[in-house]
Image (cartoon, rainbow, N blue to C red; front, side):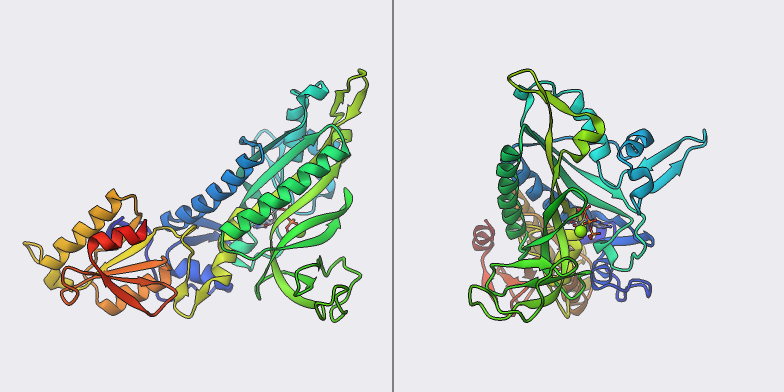
Length: 416
Ligand code: ATP
Ligand code: MG
């Protein structure tokens, strides 16, 4: 991609009403733009990151048998009355149509997936299975000051699993835990598996918490890694000595990037979701639900992986693999094109042919401006082509000060 053609550009200062670090950085770097409070547009750079995060999540969901589908965002009011959540779900958007009909705008999808699953489950032979989607959710959050960490419109991955009994459910719950660990590791995040209240469904659920000053949650955890609980529900207090001798428990702010819930038969009971066992008896289906905040993850990565110059994406989620910069300004752009431009173009085309995703800052701007923008955007590798570097490419990682001069062949090889 040529930067000159890219829709969405960097800006020096974020608008005054962007108060969170993630939204300031992502707005300045040209990844997102606010529509209204708690609602963001994702520009091409931002969408590329969202897609990379989503694809990692997809791969790990497929690996544990999750089948992808896409459920409706505009939902059925009757289903929400059946579960009692039309009245009790505090952040539910309720729409009234021009025909005076009322619709819930989906904040979550139990009320959709369970009536749907009921059409396909009759016997024990139909179980177990799990389905998931990556979809826009709507919640009328009271406070939306945390940028894309807490949106009124946001992207979530939600997986729902259906089982014949508690034992089978528990086995799958552990499988999902392992998949979640892989996902967060691949995303370059340390997410602490944390005990939390199960709400009205069960005693405990698990949250995945990333330590960050911007976090709206607080966890009490053991630095040795054997215990973590959300401070809202934990009877255990900060400072208590870890039972396994790892020292005092700490209390820190954290961002909840995922949440997994045993649902028991709560929703199955509400909708009469049962199956016939081998003896022909009707048994309620046991369920679990498992969320990941896709857009919140992008905000979390921006919050924890940055320096004073901007964002520092990891290779796995960066919008492009390399940020190519040529130096020389107007002189380089002269017609016929200078040797610098010709070589930059060759680097660009060769790397693309090798499957490398390249953002080429092809503008006639000063080195200072180009380098500052490269650091702000945060692509993991910067390549510089200039008169001084001749037929060599200067290779530098975003998170390091050191650079090296390589031939184009060596550059392509190193990037593979
Ligand atoms: P929170 O406690 O932060 O309000 P939640 O427990 O209500 O979230 P779930 O319903 O479990 O969230 O949703 C699954 C995941 O979706 C959460 O773990 C979080 O990562 C993400 N998420 C929830 N609400 C929002 C929001 N308003 N904006 C962005 N992401 C969100
Ligand atoms: Mg929560």
